Length: 102
Image (tube, rainbow, N blue to C red):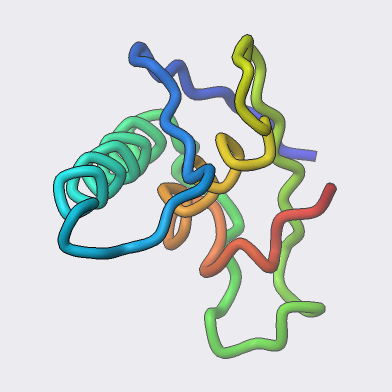
């Protein structure tokens, strides 16, 4: 099993109760910027030989990833924090978050 960690030195962002509209355009930009930061920090920490697999293979044939998030202390639904981070890891740890297992 390959293991590594990424420290994200910023407040976690939640997709809780979020839908895209003109009124939430700035929030959408903030979430996208957060996900891009997660992507860049993860790329910097990723081992060179990380097994990403082939994006054209069925999900069942790609490497599975166990994603753990530590440090959530909020009144929000913690699953929504996970989604923000999981989206930022797409194309870094896995091609899409279907490869992440609970």
